[in-house]
Length: 165
Image (cartoon, rainbow, N blue to C red):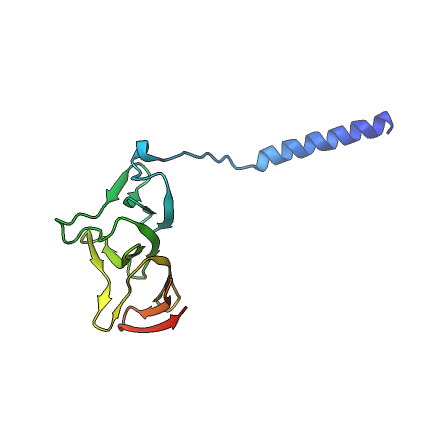
C-alpha cells in the first residue's frame, strides 16, 4: 500500500472514531444488591408500573424501587393483608394500575392505593402452585402460565378459560 493510501485509510478510521464518539450516548450502570436495600441478590422478575416505580420479585419478597430507595414487602402471618408468599416469580400491571403477582404458591394482587395484597380466588377457580408467567392482553385479560397449563382470566367479568398442559 502506498503512503498516500495509508494516510487516507488512517484519516478515515480517525474520522469514524470521532463521529462515533459524537453520537454515542453516555450510559452508566449502577449495581443494586442487598447492601443497597434489595431483599435478595437474585431477581426472578421485574416490571415498571405506570407510576414509574420499578418492581422486582425475589425469593425473599417483592421490592419497589422509586429511583432512590427500595421498599420491601414480605409475607407476615400476623398481617392478613401482607404478601401471601415470599417467592415472587412473575409480575404484571393491570390496566387499572393494580399489580398482579405470581408466586410459588399461587396468584395474588396488590392495590397500590390501599397497600393491600389479596390472594386471587373465585368460587369456581383457584390457581395454586408455582406461577411461571403473567401477561395482560389488549382486552385486559390476564394470561397465567403454570405447570398445569394456561389460564385466561377476564378480570372485569370474572370469566375464565383453561388450556391444560
